[in-house]
Amino acid sequence: MAATEDPFPRPPLDPAALNAGLVRPGGMWERIEVVPEAGSTNTELAARGRAGAPHGSVLVAEHQSAGRGRMGRGFSTPPRAALTVSLLLRPDVPPARLGWLSALMGVAAVGAVRSTTGVRAALKWPNDLLVPEAFRARPGGGDGKLAGILAEVDFSSGDPAVVVGIGLNVSQAPDELPVDTAVSLRGEGAADLDRGVLLASLLGGFEELYTMWAAAGGDAERSGLAAVYRDVCTTLGRRVRVHLPGDRILEGVVTAIDAEGRLVVDGPEGERALSVGDVVHVRPAG
Image 1: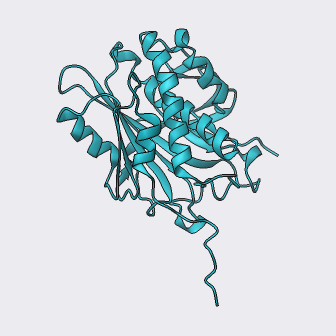
Image 2: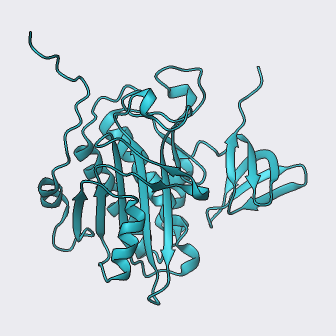
């Protein structure tokens, strides 16, 4: 009796093809390295950056065993089931504008997911990649988290080096996901689960956005990044509950995302601009 073919195969990435397609003279990407396993691609690439790795270095792990998310949250991924990648950047922009790099990654990820898989991804402030409830394959379960993004800045060498990482769920089954609110492209009915195609689209989109942002000196408004971010951010206009440092909570309606990327919330004491906080989208009553 013939073996049943796996409907969701998990082939390895092809680093030679990725480098041939994305590394070019005058381009942004220096080298795309694919490793079988890493604890955290951000941690490993940051160490390489301190040892002199150049701007445009890319590290991808087929299996990430100790990934790090926002607010110290950890996660791991099954081998070849997710896209776990970090980028090393050395931008010549004012340090105050470096916070836009995680948003830039988020915008690039939304574009890559939408164009290659057909899944209607969006962002939750500041940089969680979601499938909004209205576009879920099985509505009724709230927003589903596809990916988290983490940017870290290192000033140890004088000029800032930034590592931006993303862990995107691709082919995981429900029981392989870390929490009930997480989803995968497979579970959301993606038309294509080819991680190589997805990574190429992600890096291509990132390079285009980064080139405009860097040319504008990191000015997100002048480069157009802020406008594109607002367009794909589903938090804008929503009622939210924001968990702030010190166990404080702010509830209100998001009225804007300002030029610094801060969330402007109209709460009980008027409008307040937030640069940090864990946001929960409050579902409408009824």
